Amino acid sequence: MISRRFLLLFAVVFSSSSLFGDEGMWLFNSPPLKRLKEKYQFEPTPQWLEHLQKSSVRFNSGGSGSFVSANGLAITNHHVGADTLQKLSNEQHNYLRDGFYARTQGEEIKSTDLELNVLVSIEDVTARVNAAVKPGMSPDESGKARGNAIAQIEKESKEKTGLRSDVVTLYQGGVYNLYRYKRYDDVRLVFAPEQQIAFYGGDPDNFEYPRFDLDICIFRVYENGRPAKIDNYLKWNSKGPGDGELTFVSGSPGRTDRQLTVDELADTRDRDVPNLLSIFNRREVLLNAWSQRSFENARRARDDLYGDQNNRKRDRGTPEEIGRRHFRRRQAKIDNRGLRSDQEGAGRAGKDCATLRLSRTGTSQHGRLSGAARTLRFSLHVRAPAYSSNR
Image (tube, rainbow, N blue to C red; front, side, top):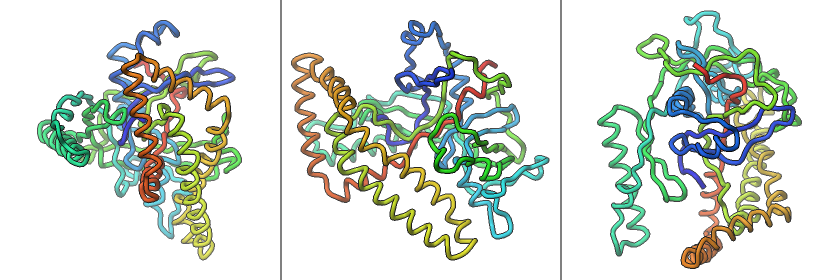
């Protein structure tokens, strides 16, 4: 489990007729340099990584995007921009359904509450956070001490730099990183296609590849009433990726569960996901019923309804996949490798796993739902194959 907040990372995929993703998602301050060199003969320089990091943007509505011009244009998925399209719409203008195009900068529409964040720097503050926990503290006291230390670090950083400062918890508290973001809170809508084009193929084509639709939105960030001057942005590659070309995806997912143990996965299958599916199904029924009362209700509910349908479809195959024998065997091997690291380490890990089983089994219904609700934050990427990161 990587993070309790959004963070910036990148993944690698190969572009070919049978697209596949390589193992791993990596933090920008911890790239697998040796592995990339040995496996792909590629050595990303610090300058290349910094350029890609600062070209990537995080939408506070949930999702990722990229700067694509020197004068503040940012591109993202249509479903990432849908929240803003919904809020800008009214009974006279349904931008989510009908789309929008600003012919001039003067026609660009300012969003109501959209904010774009660019990760400027990362600082390891693990030692300072851990130093706040003193011997003899109870779990509640330790948690409060860490929380106070994190709040103080964020406050000092904000006062010193003027940048948004978030301490990100990694690996369930194994590492704490301070992320400093440049904030753009004047964000204006430039272009959005009609929803029929953006969501062409509907639910049957959802989560399929390739998918033939125009799933994009374009915004522009402003500073002091003028288009912002952007130094780092991704340049458009009209040729697209070549067959077998090494391609990177950069973005801000909410979390990854790749390191869950077999027992945690079983609990996810048996309790967390069924609870989530029940919530999504109930919300979908309620929103559908409310939408049928009027066209205006349908307009207002459409974004939330699509979100619930999207989440339901994403999660409904999880129990079946976790239950597959080959999946369990593979995950058990990963768990066992960690337990056999050495005799002393294995003993500690075994004790931790036993404690984890006990704590998960004893979790209250409210606790399970709260934990499950956090999994609603999912990864949304702008696919890098459409761009070139060469400056």
